[in-house]
Length: 163
Length: 291
Image (cartoon, rainbow over all chains, first blue to last red; front, side, top):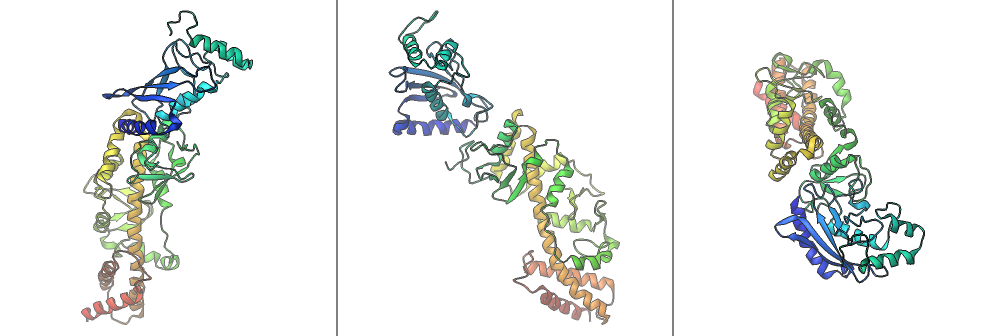
């Protein structure tokens, strides 16, 4: 099935160059052309969110059985404060990444897009960051956004090795 | 997207369609996904499909029935039975039943020389007729199935190969299967993850096509032969003296039927040929030879 990955790669370089709909995906490509199982992506924060103006790196691992099995995707550790992301590991809680919800009709671009959309619509019912989820649930948007902005701009969060 | 949504390759070969929602995939890809997902949902729209149609060969598999991996061969044959094209002249069949029951189902020759007898549906055959038919429809496997009920039986001289062996051979040897498909089939069999059900699907599909082909051909021949017998019987019954013995009857039956198969390209084409008149004409020629 790695032929499918090669096809995706070829199609992606065209789509990302041309389609303004995906302007927020700065990069989505294999780490090295020799190994199509490891990819990386760089996305910009969506407008009207505290993430705007920042860039975020995603690490993507494509299993042998892809597309029967979903790709594994996570943010760089300790870079993404979000109620559905485990801050320390970068792990993402997103239904399309789970085996139970995945379908092989999706591709890597779909998934990166879904992750990007998650940034503007946090889902407090399946939190990996309880503090942020509580703020979302309390509908305290300004507290939620300023806390994220604080972390993103280098605010200390435990042993943050950040920017 | 023009290709298969699962592997992104072109659907020009090996395509099939989920009947309920109409989405198309490679047979192999969708069965692999069904096996993995443990349900029969379409990857594109998540609608559950119970039927999968092979587009090129117009064969439909009942996936719901099939999802039980412990599929017994009896279930396959039951399914094949539903594909059978039943002949309309049931009345005629009825009246000649006692006579025909002992004749070879394929060539109509009498019981003395029939040497294959299906225990399941009590149909007699000449081994040579059965084997010829199998060759004609492109089945080069060594075991032979009853054309009526699809019971598989071997011959006395050769041991019946096991079902598994036979299926593998079907896939590899059947000329109708493209080499590329055969190869995909192999590549799917190799990794453990693809498992039993994909292979079983292939097996079933191949079986269905095979049996469908076989049925089709024997049904055409049977219909053509019904005309020949009708004409012959009228001669025989009249006691006109033209046909003196049963041997002559079967000899003429054989020659005339084979001629008719040939001129109508092994297909029953009642709109193109008047089989009664053709049979009458050919029988007349044969009768003149006897005199």
